[in-house]
Image 1 (spheres, rainbow, N blue to C red):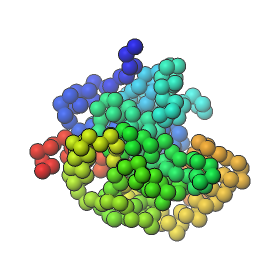
Image 2 (image 1 turned 120 degrees about the horizontal axis):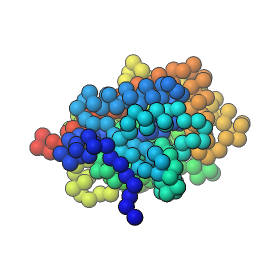
Image 3 (image 1 turned 60 degrees about the vertical axis):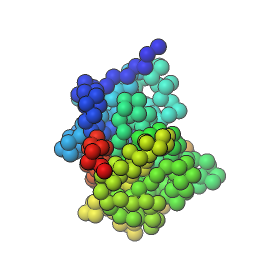
Image 4 (image 1 turned 90 degrees about the vertical axis):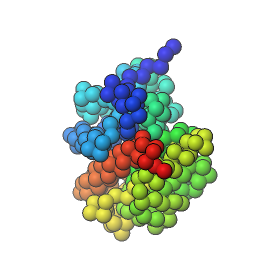
Amino acid sequence: MSLPIDILPKIKTALKNGDPVVALESTIISHGMPHPQNIETACTVEDAVSAEGAIPATIAVIDGRLKVGLDEADLNRLATAGPGEVTKLTRANLAHCMAGGGTGSTTVAATMIGAHLAGIDVFATGGIGGVHRGAETSFDVSADLYELARTPVAVICAGAKAILDIPKTLEVLETQGVPVIAYGQTAFPAFWSRNSGLTAPMSASDPKDIARAIAMQRELKMPAGCLIANPIPEEDEIAPSVINPIIEQALADATRQKITHGAVTPFVLQRVLELTNGASLKANIALVLNNARLAAKIATALGKPHEMH
């Protein structure tokens, strides 16, 4: 039984030639934003990767086949699908969806698996999942953190989603041996805000330095990925003093409505969108684009080992 995987020809050629490729997730299309912003953002993010000299590879499962690189029809299908038509895929349900001929969008964990299978080393997303508030009783910890510990793909994000318990998220990453590097500052960012109030374990100000660290990790045969925390641009951030009370209200609403497990994050993000009158969506788009640009620079540096020394 061969793996049902389709890699777009231009991506296959780029990987064969050692040209820079950046993986992109597809959950942002099907579950992260309303239509038409979802398809517009997906195309803009791909364009941002291309503008920096790398090739974008958005990953999803379409009719049971793992697609590395989506054509226009695939993107539109994910963007306009009705409720329940597209499964949100992580490590736990990826194989089941593919075996049943299903269609699904990939979260951070599933995108990392797909990228690694295709030979892509760098992946840009919005924010990673992590330890949920109250996890000491609910045990609600995102599979993203464990994927980072076992799959050697560098993930560029704007930090952990601000609705999470960020100190505990950093603790789990440290325990799992995942390098966490803040880009251009020492503070660990918190998605919509540039500063979570916590210092990142490591920092770097040059994409080439990050590429060197990733390459060295590979030479050391370390199985883990690497987390690059790239703060949202200053002009696009929502200050912690503004966003934190809104997050608290959204979480309280979730508790009152007995929203649990995987439904918590989508519910809270939607409530934050409503309570910020759309400002959180604008910031979300800005940070994803910012991460795509940095990912392309890191992928380009990784592909030129003679320039990294």
